[in-house]
Length: 114
Image (tube, rainbow, N blue to C red; front, side, top):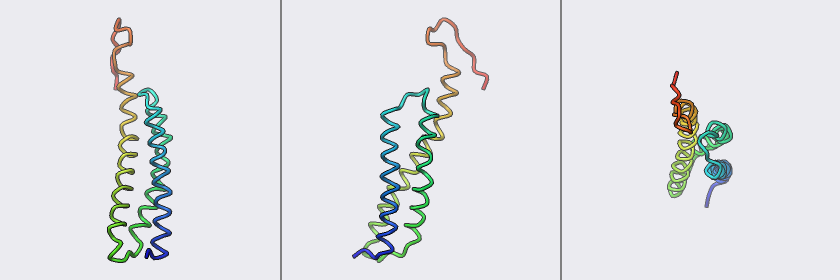
C-alpha cells in the first residue's frame, strides 16, 4: 500500500505533470514558427509547479517495493521538464531565423544583423 505521504506527493506530481503535458499538446496544435516565442511563454509557467512537485517526490521516503513507481514518475517528469526547457530555449532561435531569412518573395534577400 502507498504510504499517505507518497500518495500526496504522487497526486501533486501527477496533477502538475498532466497539466504540463496538456499544455505541450496544445502547443503542438498551435505550432507555427513565427509564434514560437509566444507559445514558449504559454508553456514555460508549467515548469515551476512540475519541478516543485518533482523535488517533493524525490524528498519523500518510499518503501523499497514502490521505488520503481517513484523512479518511473521521476523519469517522466524530468523528460517533461527537459521538453519544456528545450522548447523555451529554441523559441528565440526561430525569431532570429525568421528575421534573417530571405524574404518570402525571394526578390530581395534580407541580411542578418545578429
